[in-house]
Image (cartoon, rainbow, N blue to C red; front, side, top):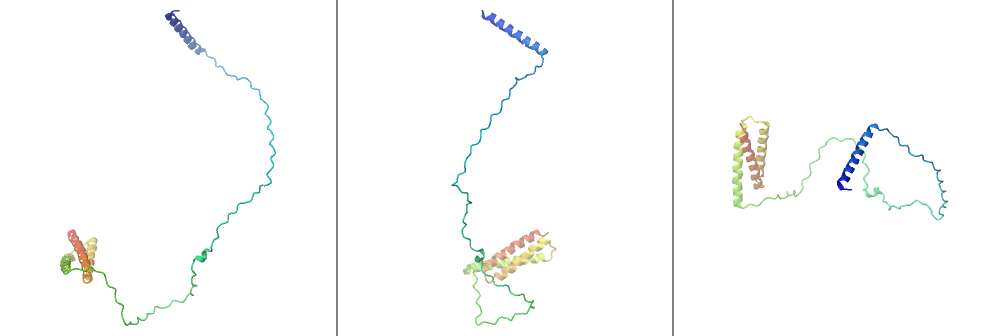
Length: 194
């Protein structure tokens, strides 16, 4: 059979089958599937359980853990003295002043930086300059109406100045640092004035 004839026949049969299937689709009748009947089997008997005898040489005893011997915790605390009996309140009676001793205690020496004469002269000069500027600034501020913040700054300036004057004799370097702080705060206060 020639190849072209075989293709024609195959195409014709395919076309006829397609048309036939599609035309049969309009006349479909619903079919219900009925499975074949199943015959029930009788259940198989369960084999009896074999008798197992309990072992005679096994004993079940609870495990006992022996904790290390604990010491009494109260033995670690020191014995406290018995409470004192309550007494009635005593009025405040001034104590007698201590008796004077033969040698009064010597105050311990304070540590201070040892300065050369040149350093001492220069620090003294700086201290006097800062002190003069701070006093002038406080005199300028004295007659002004200040806000609460400005009053606080002025009070801090006075405190630093007083501390610098008190430290002048014991520690000149500390006195200069305190006076410098007072000077910086005084400048800040003067800049804030209207």
